[in-house]
Length: 386
Image (cartoon, rainbow, N blue to C red):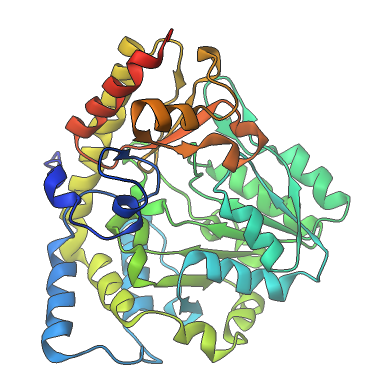
């Protein structure tokens, strides 16, 4: 049965929010930059948080919570993969989990592969963990993007010690194939390297695209890998601070168990309560409705760009609510989002922040209403030829 698409909140309500998306710019700017969505919370999440406030359940996060089991059941329902809850620990957010794992898997100064164009904080997280970024860009196949396994192997052969994977990939919305992930795992194992897979966008994979968790790609992946994920992107919970670090082998589980207790204590109490509700079966229909809304929006955006900005190049993403749009042919320079912000009053994410491969690109957040998407494109159109 086809899910009924969720409806985003109206603009006047959204402007009452106090989060980054709605406070970074003045009211005349349409904010489509940071990865927050404009939908109401899933009812189960609202109920869990309201209940906690009612009884003052605002203390320290417990050393044992229902979250690992809730996520394992969610992953089994949605991805056909059930991680062992005993191999899961929590922390404040995915970025913190990545850094804490890398600190224990690489020595200072060792190189870590990233695959640009990629989520901008990846470059800083490697540095924070004491590593050095080794860039191996995605391969453009002409119809999509894929991991450059030959390039990654060359980097590991030359001494890189880890791969920081984005699965699904931000900003392209690409979903890496089972074959590609298994190939990456074999390469990493052959060179004694580790793979840390950021899977925060996994709940947002469209049903027809499928999703393979890295740790489920092969036996080798289970041996060499970690996954770090959260309910925050799909359920718009970033401010509540909760992420999961997952292992699938005894060796990697020992790394997680060896992390200082403070790493886990950084998890937000409200983050845990909200994530348990998000990953419960009660929220599945809400998530299906979100995916249906995002499916409509990604198609709408493609139609609008084709009709009104024919010089743009856009590939419909298979996951998430972030559109990676190439505006190079419009002649708006390496960072077209600057002109769009200044003259069209639409805030998009700066393409070059994702690496050199982002020159001439913008990232647009379509996790909003069709009306706001139309308004954004209509504002940008007059810049063509101006």
